Image (cartoon, rainbow, N blue to C red; front, side, top):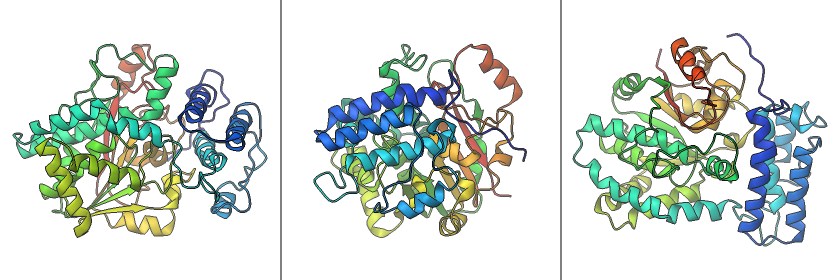
Length: 411
């Protein structure tokens, strides 16, 4: 397919620039407030912020970093160039890898292995909003199977609005990100309700095609590549339980990040914490889902997987051979969230009418994207949809108020 310019963060007024110059400073402030890092760690974090926003250049990881060789390869040709001139996807990924280095996550010592985003994740998972969503699970039991599938797909889709970095941006005052006054809660809907924001229909809706892919060849192996922990991971796990219990999948492989990444991205620890939250809920329907998920993990019908490439600064077009082979065996891969979408279609200034099947045609299995729009890139929209959204005069690509369900089916 034709090429398109790579999104970078050196364009004044662009969303990518606002991430580095507005969102990252707020993130750094919160990380430093959340944990009592010592002077060395705090100074390293502040240096990273100054370097990445003040005209600094990209420098390799320390030679003794466990993934130094891998990042040298991923950054070949980029070392020494300004942060702002690197592709936005690459630079943003490297910022989070360097943040772990600054906090001491990989170094022997007191902070080794400590997730700098754990306080945010834990607070969200323990919050009253999750209590309400667990209670609402009782409403699923009376739904017919097809309607239950629709409800849970919608929950997983709109649950992507609970991205902690997105909420952080809203609270820090980034323009047009926090206009959610028509909702009682601006962090996403309850699990069974899953209603979209008011007057925000799906910008692209391949729900029927997604249903067809789930039933095309009988129960098979479904891969779900997760995005965020907490209130997004909760409906993802409920959806996984439904896929298994409704015989829409014989096996589900849940792919998560191997280390903390992008504020709230899910790791194995986050999966286990969320399953435990379900198992110990004082709501019979939620407790039953948690118990079944635990049993599925022990039986192997639900498997947690990770791979270093899940934290790579590269698009899925560059999947390594082992991960490509694993995904190729899936009857369907479901990609959750904004970052996975950017990596799937390429973080470029595509015309929004570029066919999704063309942009995602390289992926090794049939693939479905469940994504709320929180960054510039989008493909697969009808011309009339683009015209309608542009006419609103709002930043519809980045404000989290619109979503897509898009599918590249089996040939």
